[in-house]
Amino acid sequence: MKQLLLSAAVASALSLSSYGFADGPIDSTIYGKVNVSVVNQDSGSSDQWKLNSNASRLGVKGKTEIADGLYAVYKAEFEVCVDDGDCKGQTFTQRNIMGGIRGSFGTIWAGHHDTPTKLAQNKIDLFNDLEGDMKNTFEGENRVSNMVAYSSPEINGFAATVAMIPAEGADVDQDGQDDTGLADGMSYSVSYTMDNLYVALAGDQDVDKQDLVRLVAQYTIDDLQLGLMYQQNEDNLGTKDESGFFISAAYKIDKTTLKAQYGSIEDDVDGDKEETLSLGADYKLAKSTKLFLFYTDNTDSSVGSADVEDSAFGVGMEHKF
Amino acid sequence: MNNNHLLSIFVTGWLLSANAFSACDFDTDDADSPNFMDRIADCEKQPEAEKNGKRNSSPAATKLYGEGTVDPLSGMAERPVVAPGSMNHSPGKSFAARQHYSLRPDAKFEESVTIAIQRLHIEMAHYCAKGWTIEKQWTEPDARVEGDFYLHFLFRCS
Image 1 (cartoon, helix red, strand yellow):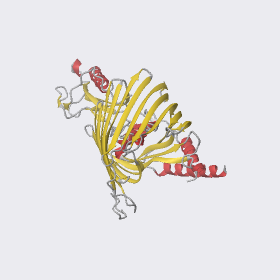
Image 2: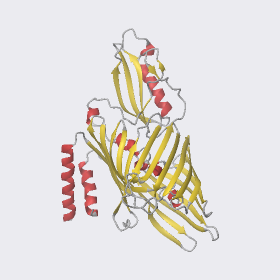
Image 3: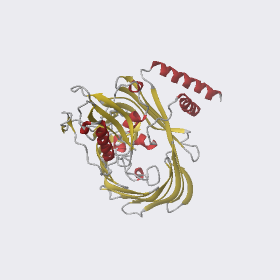
Image 4: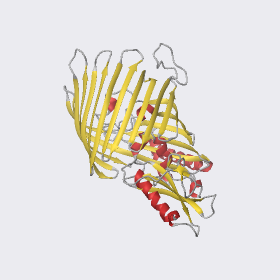
């Protein structure tokens, strides 16, 4: 308890002194969500019920005007594990953490964050953070450390983000040499938004030891939302050369949203294939609260061996604040 | 960092932050969206400078005026008022629109503020068919004609 009081006092002092020195007001918001589900997971050899916390989180974000039209912006988000309180041995684990300077020129920012490629997906993944999350099938869903990025302002619907990721001595291109440059890894996205259409081209170079290009489209027609992604990725050792696609659809009927998505990616090197299929529905209880149910089937097909099938169904709730 | 410390910083920050919840309709998942920076910048309370009357329109707001055809009333290159009835809607997206009006005694009805407001509502309905919030409205004089003004609306799709 003493530790708690001490750190609260330190935090108070820091916060108050910050108010004293900032040029503009400090506007902060605490936000987060609780997302839990009861899931039956069947991997063929085992069948078990689980309570899952699906990227439940607590975050703080804000901006401060430091000069006329110039802002310091920040976000610090931490995962909380609602199911058992154990997030990889910690009570909190880091999610997206960033700070930057924003003006009419755009935003220069840095931190431990989702890459522009991952962000460009723009929630066409309707079962994000659940068993059907596209990251279980597709590469490129990376949150990386040491990212330095520039995001342009939106100009006539166009926006772009480019990020440099110093490897800090790691061998990210796997050429046998330690990489020590500023742009050892690169990630970028260019998007266009017009009314109900969103299109993005994104890519990685030497991120997670591979190169990747993806094209994303999202279109909303009244209560129907469609998503499409095409992706190619190749690892730096030449042992993987994949291409695949992902489609999703959500249809809103009053408080209920019906959802479906399918993805398939095949490795041209060895012919292995991965597929994901998810069906589900959300029921909105209130503006920030929903119930959901889902069924997911993830299949890994390897040439010369039996398919590995992993299916799950579950019900859950999400409350955002 | 010790988890107790982290928790207490959150709690203390919460208590100190009188503006813990801003008026903007920020969704938790917006923090992971491609335009998360815009959502951070737009969804915090307006800076003091703006509250004091300084007209800094949001950098993320899409301007719906200028760079169009010459408006016979204002003489400015304005975009035409869009047609109503379409179903465009971009949740959370901000737009800035303006319309010219006149308070001159000899102004025609077509130049009245009533028509300006009507035109602005047509634009809002076009871009935010499922509803909107007017976040700010202000008026600027037309420097070329005494008694003429521009009515600005900064609005966001719900």
